[in-house]
Length: 287
Image 1 (cartoon, rainbow, N blue to C red):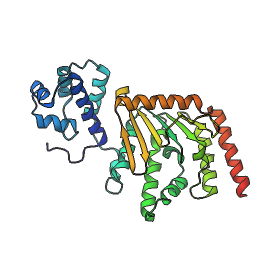
Image 2: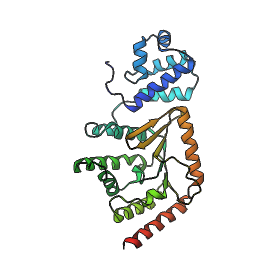
Image 3: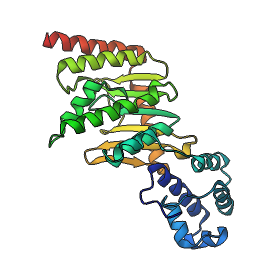
Image 4: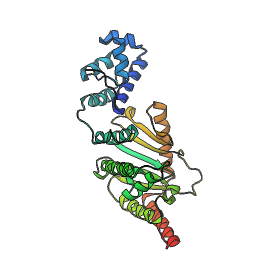
């Protein structure tokens, strides 16, 4: 088969893990190729996700690299066995790759944790709120683009609405007060947050302004747990788009950040009461 023109994020991640396996063994690409019957170009294409390999070839490479991490090898073999297209592929011609890769990560996660400082997490946004978030972009988007992005965001929420993937959301008070589309839109969004917080598998906790030190980063961050810790992924929203991190040091840092967030945020019950109080303030102010 010819090399893939545009490997998916998951295919690239598979290749990255094989490269790490090779580097930990102290092999160059040519040396590994000689050991497993691949030429150097094939090794390069494999590690960039441009060509796939069989589960048997994966295990041959792992053995050649003296990798005894059985859970990791089994998890990588599951990636090899995947077939079919994800629902997000329907949007490939109308949305940028960033949108699709976020949905891909969420779909394959075993659990998700998010922390946000500027807006409600996308997985918990109402359609009206999401539309208002996209409408604020400058230069303004055409209405049809706003509608497509909103529909995509709402469809992404099925990963948690199904109850199959648990979500922990840490929301800074600033995000609870930031308005997109006006006070009525925000009030409805706050109501929806309270309702979501009572669903099985969804934990919503607020980090109020009056904590001594905010424990997170300034960006909105998602931590997607993989089947094994080595396959965890960090996704960060920045003004230029979406960034993904999977280096062991980055993963360890963000595990620590989320642990600090959990020790600082209000309890789930306290967070519900806090959200309700903000809604009451909002309604009193704009009555």
